[in-house]
Amino acid sequence: MEDLFKLRSASGIPYVYEQDSRSVGPRGPLLLEDYILHEKMAHFNRERIPERVVHAKGSAAFGTFTVTKDITRYTRAKLFNQLGKQTKIILRMSTIAGEKGSADSERDPRGFAVKFYTEDGNWDLVGNNTPVFFIKDPKKFSDFIHSQKRDPYHNLRSATRIWDFFSFNPESLHQVLILMSNRGTPYGLRHMHGYGSHAFSMINAKNERVYVKFHFRTQQGIKNFSHDEALQMRSADPDFSQRDLFEAIESGNFPKWTLFIQVMTTDQCSKLAFNPFDITKTWSQKEFPLIEVGVLELNKNPSNYFAQVEQLAFAPAHVIDGISYSPDKVLQGRILSYPDAQRYRLGVNYEQIPVNQCLFAVHNYQRDGLMTVTNNGDGSANYYPNSFDQLFIEHEYKELPIKLGNAIADWYDRNSEGENDHYSQPGVLFREVLDDKERGDLCLNIIKSMQGITGEKSLEIIHRQLYHFCQVDQTLAQIIAEGLGVSPPSYQSSPCVKNQKINTPIPFTH
Image 1 (tube, rainbow, N blue to C red):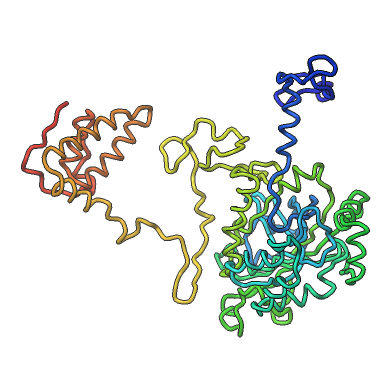
Image 2 (image 1 turned 90 degrees about the horizontal axis):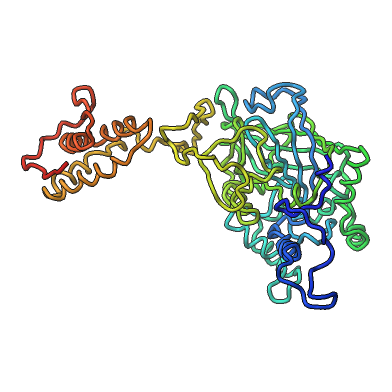
């Protein structure tokens, strides 16, 4: 146990002089050999990672989500499969436009992002404290954020630029009115609702799909600053929201939100007077009433802000079985942009960071990249399919197709009927394009390469490839099999294309 309190370098080396640099005499120049001096300075220079472009100022806490109502008629997602079931979560709430050091009582929408650590993987529900947004096409996002951020000329926030953007984009009006109400300046983070904002879909055990919207309603009650109160708090305590949340949890006053969903069938979608996947629109709660799901509680503060909040990464792309996307265009854009932002900010292996890790087994063929901190797959194959590992695809997780007008969105087999002739043109190349010498060289080159196949799976691999050569041309397969010293494919039992043999003998040397 005492080893835990011994001063050591990052490489585990004990050192004594933590506060004094090695020098030539007490007043002389410093020595290059003082490695600890360089270690401390170099690490300090690199302590800051790129700040989030949006949502830079934020607070987070761990907690639990508990199922209180049965919604299995809508979804087969395992975190909802029994009453009382608890799932570990982390929730981050943030301002959008301000920098990391800005005041968290600014007039601004608040991000409301929940990571559910489920047994089927991490589900990131990444929304805001408003049910709508300013834009409805992802191409508008960078323009919108540029207008809200600092002017590149004088580096100041500009009401002119902000309202110039709004005036060109009337679809922003719904969100603008919410922002300019007192809900644009919530009293901290505990007294505001949260929303998934986008429409998502749920899929049940019968493969039936419905569309849903997620609502987290605060149990602490809505409470907002007036305009003047928010201005005063910005100067009195620019970290008010973070302090309020942290101290409430530390004192055991755990904030809670009740999760509700709105449900819309595909038939109802087609009959609405507006596009239900337009994020600038809400769904009527009279027509699509709130359905209770469960309770989210925050009960544990992070033990280290940088490790567990600054490095916390969300992506709407991360959905689990039983929950999926919708045709919402802004959601579709975020599916691409959010993971890409995290790769830039934290590195390609950001999901290996403990706070972002799935709590259950993760197996895939991704390898390498900056800051790989796992065993990196050891010596296992890093491609699929392969002849060596035991990984298998769980086909029960296959998602049903989506009908979009007259088109069907699905995962189509690239080698389906009409797309599976891989042999005719290679056969023409072998028989009609290459001359005798080129055919001979081709066969010899293939044999020389395939002679390098080794290991207990070598014959399996060779025979599988010979089968393909057989489909191209019998002569090609026979010559290669002979050169490798193995039996040629059985033409009687295989669907080998019985091409006419080439009359000119192919020069070949063992």
